[in-house]
Image (cartoon, rainbow, N blue to C red):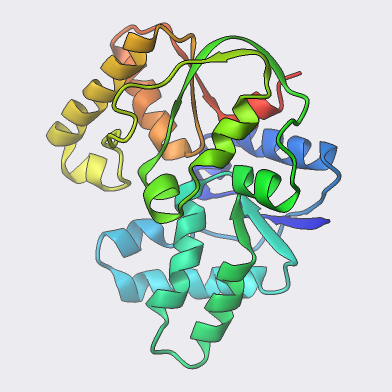
Length: 238
């Protein structure tokens, strides 16, 4: 199957290893990867901050860039959710609404694609240790992808998963929220770090780079010896 990769800004600028892992996992599962060089930000930071008209410029660019894709896969539940939301942003636009609807219908978050489209739950990954999983707000509450990550992690050889206390709690990132409301965000991420610490896990795994940057940064400042890994990196461990 030909898969067009939507890498996301965070992967492009901060987490290139996640992008590499995503490509390697999908190729190992038999996919042919296409990477459109014209992709930019999905517009979510501007959209979530209330600058809808400004965000539309980036959204139109992304719709045009991915228009010919057979299937779009991204290692981010949050950015996949934004692609799905384009159809609502352009609901009164007779030209862009149908194009946004077609984009939404062929967009998948990475684990959702592997489990629900490829019908694979064991990718042959191996990682020794105890881990816990942070379910991001956008991926679970908005995109509705809850079970796919756990199904894949349950088949990683050597990995023991521990449930994360209060897993439903937001980590306090929320894009620009962590910048505009820093003091509140800090208290929220401290709660998340305390929950991770309680599990005694060696690894914190997640499927959204923004959350992992936020939690990982706070754990580092608090001296917590927990390795943060995107689920693509875990699935690519052998």
